[in-house]
Length: 249
Length: 311
Image 1 (cartoon, each protein chain N blue to C red):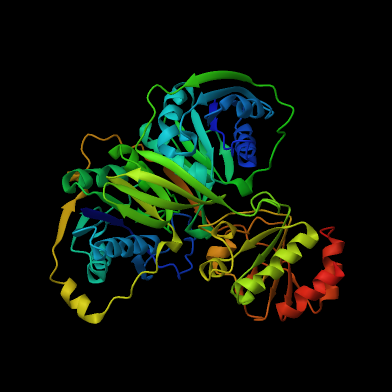
Image 2 (image 1 turned 180 degrees about the vertical axis):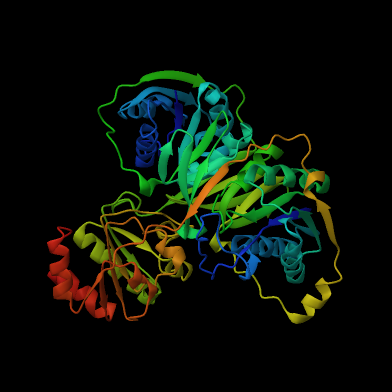
């Protein structure tokens, strides 16, 4: 079985982004870029499935600027076999991403697609579900445990009510939640080895033809409303008094 | 005029409050006419409850089989089909809505507006990005808007005095590639974390699953729900459904009391809409104090027992 892992290059999760003063976007010049943390979990899961003898090839794909090759190289250093960059100079929205990935899926014919449940930049949580829908295959979103049994997979999903288990027929799409695994660290020799692994670059226009991209218009970016400054109390008595005064207890 | 279809969430016996919150958001669009769509194997009981939501004209009650109502692939096609005459399709921004709605959007060939936190007008909305560190104003120029509604941003409305019509529908060809197996539900004795007025929340500072019992005891003492930071869930102190934050639950209780939570931005985004935030931590420099209304620095293992006594 071949596994396709889709990843996204995002502002590192430790960076506190700032909105540009003119409201035209967030300042991302010179900030650290990384693989979206959920996508790192997706790569790790693919590696574990392969290491368990249930997959023979892992292809990692991203849509993004040319520099996103760095994130693909990291994925290759983690252990993916080859990589595809779908190059797009401009930012694209979820539906176009899903259509572009569908093109790759149709070409690669994977038995399983794994990707993060959401990218921590736009927090949309859409592309995996859209891709599964366009691909007309089952989805298991927000997965914290995955078991592959030949032509089926048993997926445990983190949902609001608790842990839900569903069975999906392969080929299928899985989106990862935080507790699926802990991604491995990349070792230096693997970084050297990754440089020799194949990385193909294609233009996004080759992947989305005859598609009506109904983009949403982002009119403005602003900083969130700050909360008012609070007070510090010195004792439990003061805390209880403050809560009582607000009528909260 | 806006015609809005809202995907109702339920657990088989009652309508989830997030559905009502989505109705509240829809009502903020001027002159909106609002209908619900609800799926269940035994749909009549739950459709009757859905019809009680005030402000709803029609409930589309769709009968499913083999628990397909719990599965995105089981309900997205019919939702897309029935949305033909609607200008908007909304769902709650819960794990249920997040799972299904992008499928509906894809079937309708639309981008989705996720996590609407404010309605500006029928086609313009505000939503958070970057874990709430920025807010964007999004406008759609298209014939149909598919969106999820951030539950912490809208109030629960009247869920008892409505009298909507019920229209029955069926699914011609049920999908069989995805099967519901089981649900391991959390504690249902305590108030629901997403709708509770008070929340007691614990973090890494609790140190162990045994110590986390303190949080449950305090919560029970004041009738609160319990929450947790990602660190506490990752460490196995408490179950996943208690996680509050960017990728967990976004909540807006009147009172949020945090113990041993340092306050990573990913956590803070989940509590920004709380009425009063109380922070108790041994580290006076913890970022949680930047958003706290009341802060107390000290040892939670001394403070919690004292609180139990004095509350």
